[in-house]
Image (cartoon, rainbow, N blue to C red):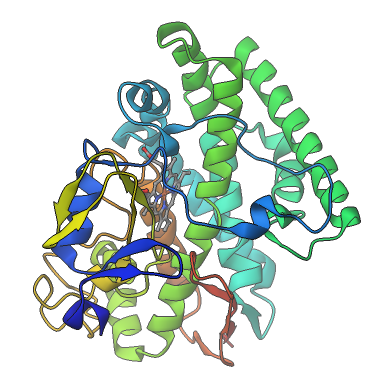
Length: 380
Ligand code: HEM
């Protein structure tokens, strides 16, 4: 409704602009010279006015590629790029297939599973472990650490002192673990992300702290996003048996199927930018210092860009959705997330031809990262 009646909407309560049209969303994401990621700030009073004190677990201590603009952004992003290149992903493909198989082996004797807890949730953690280059003998510890106390309670206004302390201790264990892996890679480099960040230390003056922040960033940005893409996509497919059959018989369809999931049920609902100087967007004057929240799902169903936008079309082409952003901040992990989801779908369908829904999905309560927290399926 907003997109049709007031595509650039000023929200008085929060003092923010919301952009909903495809062209406006794409423009604000692309135009990093006028709209900066560095200062975007949604007012979250509970982050500053906390009812309880306690050491916060903060994954990132300093600026990352997400919150900088060139030339800093270029420097901070460069060291990660090789791990996500075509060559890097080729290395990961077999590993992700193994991960999917291992997870399905664990449930194959059962009547069914929770497709989130048993499959979609652990799969990306193992995949990030492979991306980073976590040695095989340490992967179970990595999984345990990455899964424990997920969801930083620093964001929860009601978090108790105990919770905050437990999370802080957990944060310290995770940091120690990451330091250990870095030391191992320093002695024995591979073709993984941590090894290429070590090269970037030499070539781009990436500091140790920036390297640690980048690793934490990948763990945060690459987990629940991908869980939600797999979960949201499966939930859609389970209601469309013909599409599931088509995909089972033609695994090449997985590429467009996953792109359509990113458009139709993409996990990331919004990001944010702040105008550096007075700029006109969608016919509205955005004053310097004002923030714009581009709502990607609204753009992804804009009829001016997509034919029959409310329809899920598994073979949709072209499909220039904005589910992973666009411009210099476009998701660096998008190809990995798509690969994981393609493999998750095709493995599940080929190994369990009787796959069907066994109950309604449960949803998370996040406005930012929309996804399912439980999805019961049967396959006997
Ligand atoms: C389905 C899964 C994913 C979705 C929907 C997603 C979505 C996004 C979006 C929309 C952005 C742009 C944010 C902006 O412009 O402000 C972004 C950036 C980013 N994503 Fe993802 N992402 C996913 C998976 C991943 C994975 C697997 C990784 C890493 C392992 C990752 C790492 C990042 C990083 C580091 C950035 C910041 C890039 C920059 O600012 O230069 N993401 N992602």
